[in-house]
Length: 264
Image (cartoon, rainbow, N blue to C red; front, top):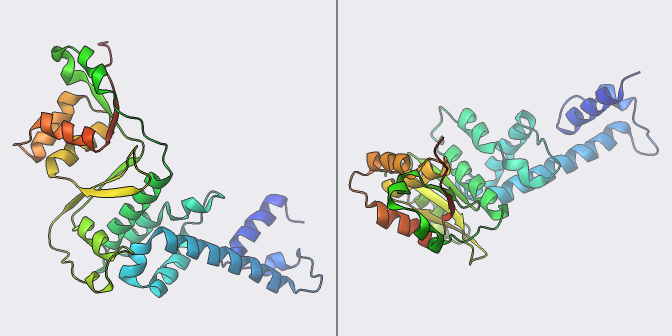
């Protein structure tokens, strides 16, 4: 007699397309053959999974075609079955799957596109951002500015790529004209993208950031103090105007708070 855990594992494997013969003897027929009952579950699980994947990665679907995405999705489901009941998280590991699956293929850039689209999904459901209280910064002595730790908005993500990721997304999103989908050259240069949902808006926006702004914001996202964050940003853009860059990031709502840790 199989244990409950063994039965659950066998059922999960069967509905993901694995062997079902060992499980059939435990399924009550009641007018429908056990194999067919399991097949109904397997079909529903697969179709719900693939429909969610397609909704999560519309740019990949447009670039590769719906049939390709579904074929890729079936292999992805088997390799990386969802670990939670919420369908929103179906695509959580798809970018990593594509990175391994397409490592030697001409379409290796699909992995970065998937990272961008997954970041979009994260921002879509992230906590609502607060507004940075600029007036409170007035109490900070200038000598302590270097120790300031700014907070990246919870509704913000950063994605960089060696490919022109922002242009690829722009020309292949649902709103883009169909004929623009093949206009992007993959050797056009790198891309640094901020995905953001602002406090005063109910939609997600994508922005291409200059190298210095992106490096500064990336360091801030890792809770680096301003001195260290500035050093990293200047390595990317030696001509960066720190005050102007910070003002830009505050204006668009990328920074939502700050702290000044006391010296140890």
